[in-house]
Image (cartoon, rainbow, N blue to C red):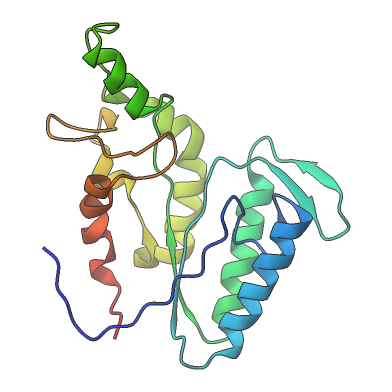
Length: 197
């Protein structure tokens, strides 16, 4: 269900960048993220901040332009904790959107293959173990740190056994990393805990 009210939401997005303020995917991204962060903490009207990111980014640049390889995502997690702590220190209520399993294929290309009989079926799920192997450490860490302010899309798109990319009605992804309209609508319940007023 969609409820319309007088809530106002400001979206600050960083295409192909992370929201991290001590390291990022490039020096340009780091500069942009810091600028967004400064804008947020200086604006007293902004009470709540929802942080979202691509969780599988493993190469970062620090403030001295050093290239860092983050094989086990410890740097990412530490940088997220730093960002969250800084926002809280500046009197912001912080929510973090957790990771989701994304398809390793382009849904539109797969549909074309089906249409032209180059493929008989599309797998719309993956074993949940793939998700757990990649993200269980981070999910445990941020669940403990943030409690109910850690928003878990995996609880919507995954069962105990599998994570789903679609159903018989539609794909939940428009490409290999972005939710489709139907996938986004499925996520609405995720924000029930956030009072935007």
